[in-house]
Image (tube, rainbow over all chains, first blue to last red; front, side, top):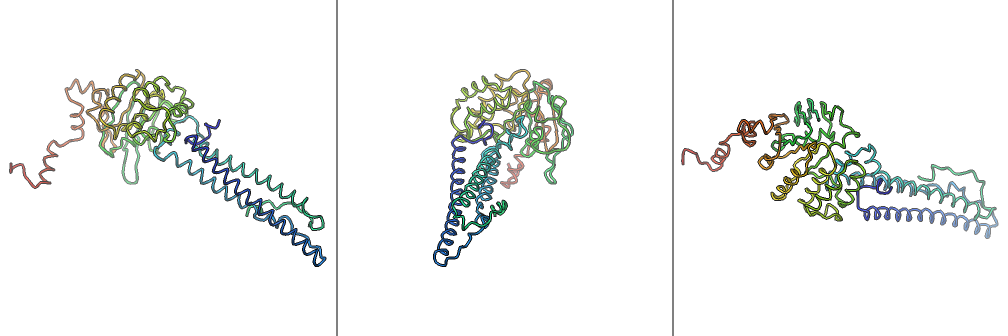
Length: 163
Length: 247
């Protein structure tokens, strides 16, 4: 299966490419994770300090405020994936015009599959991980914040997550 | 049979092919001759549909498409192999995509040319890469094998080996279409010669016909190209400032 969807590169090169992309994904996921944790804990600490010194109970900001743009990592990863598609496409013109061979196969989508498959799969993986991360953020926000600091929950403003 | 009907192709104002019509029959070994820029490569790329053109090209009565393009194979001096993968991986790819792939021929040719199966093709020398390009074209199991200057940059021994092997393995129904300017080297084994100049077919002759007329292929080409026999001496005179009359 793998051989049918990968660009016409050596196995070593393909695994290096996938490995680098997964490393990048890990770094980006870690960044968004640590950003959210830092913001949420800072807000809880602020509210606790305020309550301790002034006796005033302040609510922490709505979850959408904390999550605004948290997943800037997703469009960044998407951009890298688009670059990868282009690199795969260029590989059929580099050192040899192997595009001629690809165009002589009976499968009309051969070139597209070999250029797009890995980047699309990686992006889907990144998106799924980000959505799992989002579920984790919401669960943490609702369960780890002391109930007295929690504002009313109105759901997630999805599109504001990314920019 | 491949029918090329009224094919024209222009690059800007330059006509690369000008109303070309040719029929290629099964089992022929055709040499396509022409100077650099005459339209040889454009002609072959048009057949494969790699470039858009005006006119019509039919393979066994049908337009060339994804369904029947497997009947054609292509070896080019630009190379069309995958440089990053090795010969064994190429064989897997070809077997997957071309039902007609000839495993035995592939192995035999790889052994004959002494090419490694496990080295990425980009690591081979230019001569070996040319050989591999031709091996793939010959092993695909295509009915029509197109070769566009497949041995440009290769030494003569390399080319001689190739010609010998080619003659030894080609089946009756296999058609070879060889674009080259090495007229003398291929004159001994082609069955038909097509001459192209400035995008026009200026000659199309069977070798038997030439033999009957007692004309060599080289002379036929010179005749159709209106080759001036005194071209060299005139040029030398111009360059050196001498005149034939002085001698």
